[in-house]
Amino acid sequence: MSTRDKILDAAAEVIAERGLARATTKAIAAAAGYSEATLYKHFDSKTELFTAVLVERSPGDLSGALARLRRPESLDDHAAALTDVAAAAVDFYRQGFPMAASLFAEPELLRAHRADLERLGGGPHLAVAAVAAFLDECRARGEVAHGINVDAAAALLMGACFQRAFLSHFNGPDDDAGTTRAFAASITATLIAGMRRN
Image (cartoon, rainbow, N blue to C red):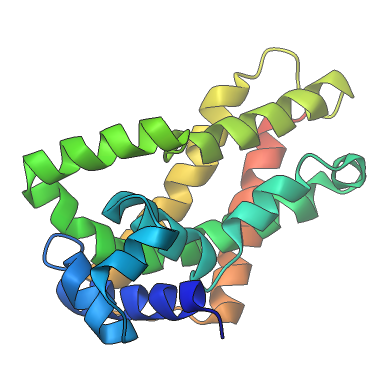
């Protein structure tokens, strides 16, 4: 296992235990068995490390599912492509909640995190934008009604996934891969039905 992978594994564990605000780079480096200097050879900031943990250590593959939306074959079965995104999004948001919750309790940390994400060209808005771009392609093919606001439709899909993840933390974990997938298929089918041409 590479040094970078060991740091990511340690960061995922420390952030999950302590929350992002209390997960220091010193603690993460120690858990990985390295110095902070070694950590900073692989990651420019704590935010970059946190983002890498979310993207590379999430149980779902949200970035992969979103990337697949850009493939032409995804348009041939847009329901399956959107279901993949929705299922991965629920998993991504579910894992991210415990890690990110402390961000919102610390305004200075949130500002720094937001600035780092902007510098890295990242942010939570990108998932909605990717789904909206895909739905725009579907609209161009005549599979989505012309008057549909694809940005709003994308926000509805991703917002439903976010709420599902939130509720699983608030009410207690009750989702497994099967129920998550069933939810994703149901929410996608509902969205598609509402966007079809009359």
